[in-house]
Image 1 (cartoon, rainbow, N blue to C red):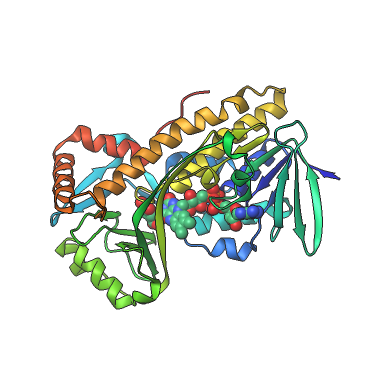
Image 2 (image 1 turned 45 degrees about the horizontal axis):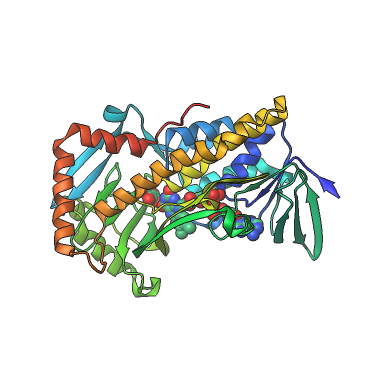
Length: 393
Ligand code: FAD
Ligand code: DHB
């Protein structure tokens, strides 16, 4: 039976980043990804990186293109009641964020990974993680193989096999599914503003983001009952303009969409994140609603804690950091989940039984007005947006 030190299930950003960081510390790993490389790199997802994430990517040796092409943003705008309030990230929290797409990160990591990844590894199953000799089986090109390992990293996203392999009585799961989605489009047009705009509007939330100075990423809140086919480009642009303050709506450049998709919104956390020799990281352990762009950053932060623990184990034989992994990661996960839930609740129109929509909307506007007048409240937003620090090991 073939053997490696760490088997990583899932070749998304968490799995590939972990593999890269481990390699830099002399730890051998094998990544098993069920899809093709082209499929994984084609998924348009997150676009905003905290400084902790950019530092980790650089540490992993995949930061050069991001440093060249990423756009540094020192603030963003909240739009509501026809006006805007700027959150000065640099001034209030002393840090900035970087706009650089998940697709680019995925490509950079894929280029660096080489032979450590088995693409199209089907029927992955994990065994023995409660003991000292776990193993992982998979099928590729009709042949089934089993790999013995010291540890398994479950980096296989929300629908993956890792979390599903944990006996139900060993895991607590917390979940809220929001009663609306985000319709997103990508278009080869210059962004309406050089900073992001998060808009609260009676017709629903809108977000103006970007991937570069010539490529825009825009989102509008939409009912879960609607399909992409219900949204020809003209309808999307019309709805986006309606939800933006007039001066931005007038400046908006429209054009044909090159991608269009609807994402559901969910808050989900599984506890703990370690089960014997199985460690969950990223979306396998938690999902946040996208408002505030925490999903990818949380995944990277988990990996930052996990690779340190694994590296220390192979360097010294000590399991101290591995034992602390779940508690350290979860302390931060809960805070980021809280922020994502709060920001989602502040900015969206929430159609829910038992909730008076007019009251909810008035309370949102009062809170946004308060934010625009209180430096302390704006600072709290800025601190969370740029990413909270970790408790020291
Ligand atoms: P994933 O990216 O989900 O990667 C998991 C990998 O595991 C996948 O490649 C999958 O194919 C593989 N896998 C699954 N099951 C198996 C198996 N059984 N065997 C082998 N491999 C398997 N975050 C933001 O911050 N901003 C956004 O705008 C944003 N938009 C999003 C839009 C969508 C539609 C989705 C789904 C997510 C979005 N996110 C966003 C969240 C962000 O993309 C994720 O947090 C991030 O991708 C997490 O990385 P990950 O590697 O943990 O999980
Ligand atoms: C993007 C997504 C987000 O959820 C966010 O808060 C900011 C930017 C984006 O896809 O660009």
